[in-house]
Length: 378
Image 1 (cartoon, one colour):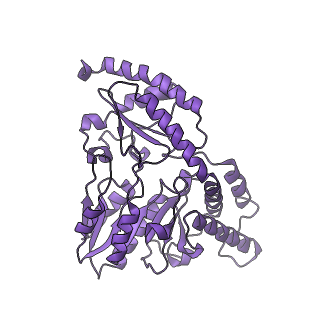
Image 2: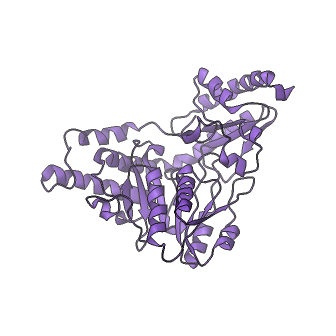
Image 3: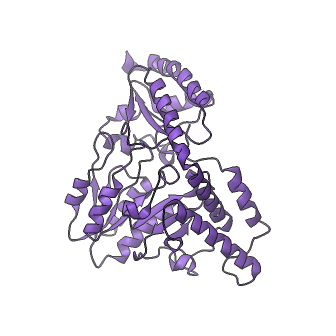
């Protein structure tokens, strides 16, 4: 029940990757046959990733993760365009891969506007337009939030960015393979992706760079990936990403079934008194359900569920060991004690109605026991 943190590698993906660890182990920069074979495999994977988001093959650059893709997009744009301006617009609920990168750029003299969101986690496109100045060089707003699942009005923001001739980046790590995506329709210049969120391997990501968009490389070396991301390519990982993208496109129609499963989960958990849904009730990722429970501490919930064989989280897996409340939940207006009582359940391809029923059956007792121990509930 934590598929937003990561997913199991699909058996078809593993099968596709295996030959590139031993048999077809060539360096794709080599001219001899096993090197050319590796290069062909990379280009085939590039096409499959491009097909998933309606892009051209040459618009895809492979990286080591979604985090690297975000860094490359944001820093690459900022440093390339510094003579034009030094202002960046983002939101207060971005993934730390974006927020920490923006904070770093502030230390380098850039100015960053962090837009607020409403109680459902939505960015208002009007606020984006109002924040634009003659110095604005980049807008970076995530496609959907990794914690509360709220889907942002990216197309509307894209129109604003294009009208103002401003580069627009979106972190789509949580949406590729879960929502139908067409990069042109979204109006984005840059789009970040990660393989391990769509049943691919960890350690490989990609960045869509719209034709005509120029960014500055952040990794220098042998000029790999069109001189944008140097370093010998992770051939097995890239092949795995390509296969995962191919399978994701096939499985995309099943996301509606996943939404129905999520709705069943929400309905069942709402039977618990003083339980609330965080995020937008309908504009949310198909498998995402983020709850909060009065007088309950999230970490205790996670540990209690784990003892029952259920993996869940209190928010982003990247910060699940932190004692500070989620910046996303604080941004939507929750008090720290409310934010600490959150539970994120995210469903994937392999989840079943029986598993949902199991969670719904065991959670009320867990919540009640924790409330009995809480001094706040007395």
